[in-house]
Amino acid sequence: MKEIALDAIHKSLNAKMVPFAGYNMPVSYEGVNIEHQTVREKLGVFDVSHMGEFLISGDKALDLIQKVCSNDASKLTDGKAQYTCMPNESGGIIDDLIVYRINEEKYLLVVNASNIEKDWNWISQHNTMDATMRDMSDELSLLAIQGPKAAEAMQTLTDIDLQNMKFYTFEVAEFAGAEKVIISATGYTGSGGFEIYFKNEDAVEIWEKVMAAGKDFGIKPIGLAARDTLRLEMGFCLYGNDIDDTTSPIEAGLGWITKFTKDFVNSENLKKEKEEGPKRKLIAFELDERGIPRQGYDIVDENGKVIGHVTSGTMSPSLEKGIGLGYVPADVAGVGNKIQIQIRKKAVPATQVKLPFYKG
Image 1 (cartoon, one colour):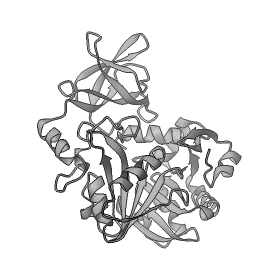
Image 2 (cartoon, helix red, strand yellow):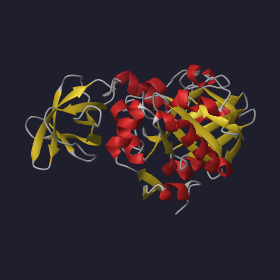
Image 3 (cartoon, one colour):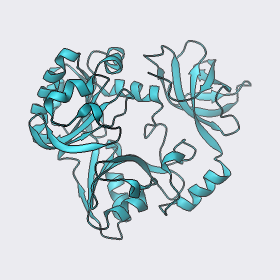
Image 4 (tube, helix red, strand yellow):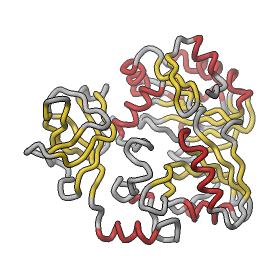
């Protein structure tokens, strides 16, 4: 089991630690609902240092990224980030990731923790143009400082104007006394904030300064359990649940990051799928009655016939109702359409809704 740089701090805060993607990670501190509302109303800090970071550089860096990723990275300028995915050759997704353009010949790819080795091997396999690749996953720590008070609370730690940073932009600057920190206006919560990338050796000092700067604003450490409820209220896909090696970006509703202005792995087949329409679609639903939908539960029609499965589900702390995502046949998908979720022996009625669940 690998240890993140702040392992001892989380344990000193009595975090509940669980194994995740080969690391011991804090899943909760005070409890999911309290932590969830802290991020929605104030600000919280997540340690997500288990994520993977690859540096792709050289004059062929963009060519490699364009080949393996579905979105069009040629649209990026220095200091811009882009959400994308890496399709496989059979219609599924290797991983979803964020691409940061540092400069014309240097890009940072941030990938899911559980896919680091798989992603590295996949990109390496397609690196026929000899772009320079460096796996920095074990060198960097990552904090997500999220919530409506994040910019105001963290402003004392940097000279960058945090309040006016646009979504999906970043700067490399001094932060909390550490140099060359990537300060990125991104996140997985839907409540605004930043993701901060820095060297492991700076982790303890940055954590302490972040907590001190946020103290008067109500900052709290937040675990991965609340990260999951926050992202689900926004309808953000989670790799391994809502997207995987068997789900296409088209059926997952990720057509907006699938650009056919260039050739990439399996682009012809995905373009055909988009033109003809996918056979199934990822839908969002709210339960009409009390109940909690969970991953793996059957989605059934009015006759009790299984038509799909829940990929993510929870009791929404903000809405106080059961919400979820799942795949159903395309002719069943549609906002307002009724389905049922099989929760133990009861088929609980649900209504398909437009994302996000949480409107803020």
